[in-house]
Length: 104
Image 1 (tube, rainbow, N blue to C red):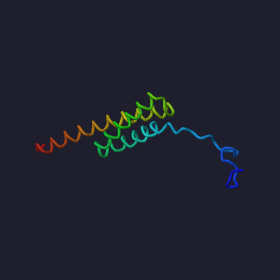
Image 2 (image 1 turned 90 degrees about the vertical axis):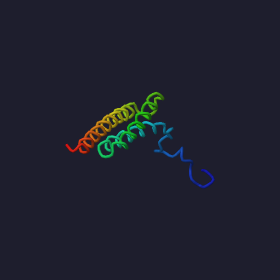
Image 3 (image 1 turned 45 degrees about the vertical axis):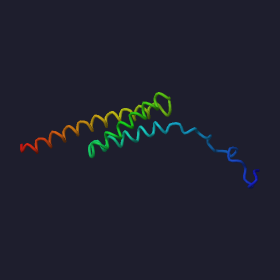
Image 4 (image 1 turned 135 degrees about the vertical axis):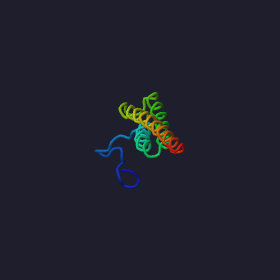
């Protein structure tokens, strides 16, 4: 018994061991990849920024072998898709704006 009358938490049956929480970069990459893909269609600049940051986090997580390999790979792939889609929509927007200015 500890000083407060309760047994120590680590000796309680059913408790899981504490983890280091080292997959934050992998989760961040995945979340930013998803956000990047969604915003690449709606607001291309935000999608591009989220994709680039997600890609950097994914590459760092992969080099440091942090988090699950599948989560890191999914974050990298979604980030690349977000970057490509954002660039396509930026180009499309620029072409449409140029046509509109020229009166076509």
